[in-house]
Image (cartoon, rainbow, N blue to C red):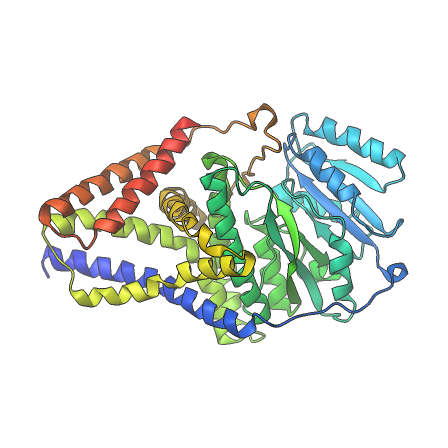
Length: 471
């Protein structure tokens, strides 16, 4: 084969792999329409019969939101004497002092709340939760990250579900958004999370496709955590790791979309990059750790096992996108024009956008007004592909990985934590210029097929690079 044929073959292979995730979106949509009306009403439980619960609040340098979080936890409506609150703190800044002052104030009011501060951050969040669990008194463990503000009735709406289901190991609530309207970036993030929770989590839990805990705004049965091997720190997604082990053990999970826990979305592109890189690396680490056990599991259907593996590996689509972009320029230079039959890949490409639209239809009466957010989300997804690709590659190195938290801003006091410059921004600039060159060459050659993709990449990488440099 000549050079053109090799490039075309590589392009088709990358596009086919990318289309697989589009087809996965269509399959998810079909399952959602089958299961969307299923309900799981909680049995009536007298207030005096509610079991002991421990609420854990893991913190690491969160001075802008720590007080909001503790106040929300202390305001939870639950019987006195059966609610324990643990402020699980690994901070190295004034977060600890702020937390201590508020903990002392609430303790003076009779609230069962303690500050557990570690001098060494061994095991990161997983290590902190494991250490706190040894001092927890609750039969059930609720976890809220620093950016969350749970409603007062969170526990009374979730705990009763455990009563008639002894094999129910975890309940996950839906994430809400405290600052979705602050910027196009936060609005795009809200759209992405709505799709995940409203559609994907509903399908995962109700169709038994390896449902998962999202790290926060959920409740674990303590016996389930212990049976699954406890919190482990060999991945940076301790939530997915524990969820997978519990699923392999046969525990059941339940998602309650009607219970919403509002949370703050990353307000800066740098913070969002940190979050997405950690999720991408952790998900890939879990794929490497559990790929064989998932395939060998006889507790789950083949459909469920394949779904779990595909979703754990989904962040590799960023690498596929970069491959497609890099191949565009030489193919355009060689004046190669793809046949009309390649349009079949566009059908698969509808899968993921339809999931986003479905979530907006479910949540918002005037959902069509939110359609422009799809453009902002597309640009963000393209622009972050450098960050995500790097994280996926790092996961395969199997080195020890640092857990990098997502800093919060709260009410904007002091402008939030400043993050170091990411050298990956230079790669984003390179890909923006590369895509622009390809776009101009496509116009010069009158080869308009790849023009939309190249224009999107120019804008996506360019906007993300610009925002990163501005910060």
